[in-house]
Image 1 (spheres, one colour):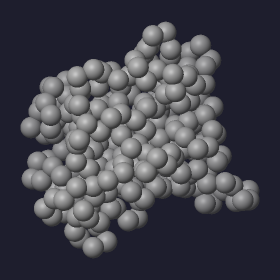
Image 2 (cartoon, one colour):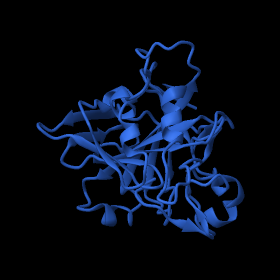
Image 3 (cartoon, helix red, strand yellow):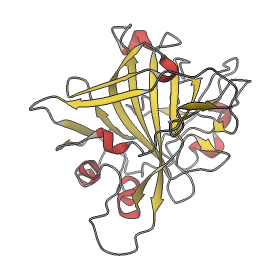
Length: 277
């Protein structure tokens, strides 16, 4: 979460292969009981939420800029996309889109931060929204309701042909990733519609959690869609080809799953309009 810079953990650069597997003791913060990500396994009874409403409107004459931060692909959306989230687990509060970024693995079978019944996916998209009750992100992360994050699981699809028409999620972005292969590189993204990054069926899990990068602030209401979107292997290769300044591949930039500590996980079945227990 909020993966906008490179950082070091016990001498291990974010993006190196050993991060998620050998640094769990570093990434776990003692005394914190609503850390993210988690493995989604169960849900608990709860009243019906209001309908989750998410919308995106692009500003005129403004293009989004994708950046290779040395740890992820990061896109700042402030003043470029009017993204709004309300309803669902945040009820009548209103949240505005700040940025989005990705987490991914070095090969098939892992890369997502959240897992579903232990199943890992190849990547995960995070769309980060700030509670409009707080004027800045810095203030928002100090409050338990400061951020809401839409999590989209991304599944790699094997390419069966050279047909490039079936591009998968956000082709406008992935077609330009070769322009930001090195850390610090920037590129404009034409005509990006973030609504196309969301799954067609928008049933979701929700729980109270945290950022997944330092300082792991426990300020996030997570909304994780249960249906993954697909990406072809060519586009996944573009993510895995991104480099840091010291020419290390940016891969495995995800945090290991954290203990649930008795938190409730709720599932909203949008096909039926009710909460599943």
